[in-house]
Length: 214
Image (cartoon, rainbow, N blue to C red; front, side, top):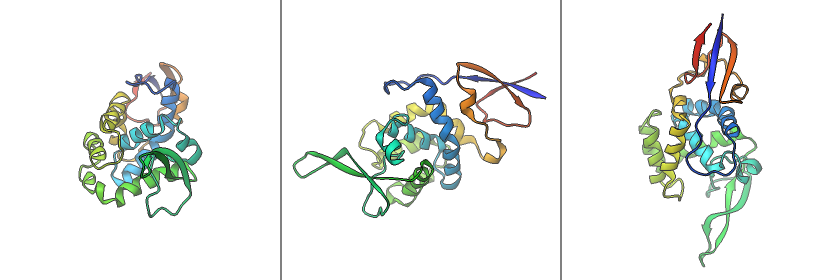
């Protein structure tokens, strides 16, 4: 028996993020959702929030931090960081008010960046209250990240929420066991606005897909 699986495209994003194509955005999510779900299961941070932060902080992987330093969450060095570093101008200023280069953490892989993002939030007292919200309350998490000072952008929470809702990222928060899914390469299923894929019925895909048995 085979499933006919109809894949629909995600809608375009609400504000201008440069010339990033729809396929690039879909690919970005496809490459990272498993990592986000794995971290959710270990830490309690909603996968949707992790993905939205990753998207916003890297501008869909176009930032120099992401492709030169594997830093996908804009995490700065802080006093206790002893790993590799990467310097770039951000929002730090000297005593005269001039922008100076900020110290950011550098990682050896994307996976290391995702793990450290979870660790950073878990060990920082500022974010303790967020873990009481659970992994299904993405709005509470987004509002809390802004309130607790994760970023200086006054619209940080609204941007995260818009990303989550535009791309329906909250569907990943509902995945309780990755072992339920034979992880198919999602990038092979999203090249067009509607792509029909013949997949053996033994495979399971995330619940956002529409299935028709033929």
